[in-house]
Amino acid sequence: MTLQELQKQALQLPISDRWQLVQILLESLQRETRGGQKKGNLSRLRGIVKTTEMSHEDSKTEQLMSDMELELQQLKKPRQSLWGICRDLGQAPSAEDIDLMRQEAWDNFPRENI
Image 1 (tube, rainbow, N blue to C red):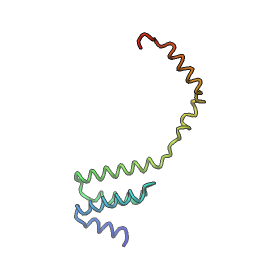
Image 2: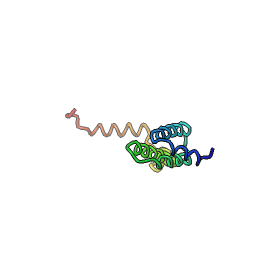
Image 3: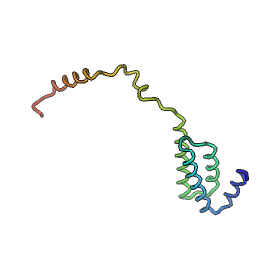
Image 4: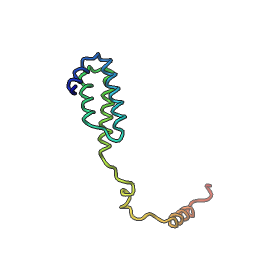
């Protein structure tokens, strides 16, 4: 059975059964592609979803599909490490420098308010 034949059969199902099928497919896709989602499967599923009439349940599914696409886009962008982000700040102060700065700050702190 080809993918197009399967899509035709899915479109002949009643809407409630179609939604059940879409939900099962979404759950299956999420389980199979935890590390990275396959865009082809996602677009095929979107095609099935778009052929149904819009209702409250449809908008939920559409929102879920949009969220999955955003997650897919975010997975593709590698993040810069925190060490790399801070490298232009120079060398970190030593523990002695931090202690000295704390001592200087507390020396100038008014004692009568404590």
